[in-house]
Length: 165
Image (cartoon, rainbow, N blue to C red; front, side):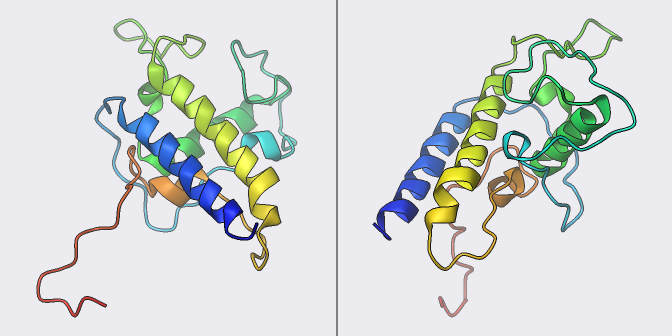
């Protein structure tokens, strides 16, 4: 059982990374500064009290309908930092000179993002707490993406002339 949980975690992350790799990536925003934290996992975090009330947003499938405008913006900005991207990486572009069409599902990256949000919530809620020896385990977008739209799925090649270990 102790080996089964880490193995299922690796398989789940690999499957999501493989599915994600099939989507072409738009040009990303500049990488965030080192140490920028990823956003809280929306499905497993209580909605923070904000200065305004629920924004009445359309087409929220994973985030709670009661999320405030300030909290939604903080979550979205956290995704942008964790992946080094801008809004139109996941949201459909608006007409020339217009903001993105946030409710639209036309951009396939939006469904990938929703699946990734569900995955991190499940890992944090159901899988990581069952692994003995971990203290306050937490997976975020930053855990894998590290400021890149496509997470690395293999270790980098060894440096030439290096000791190899």
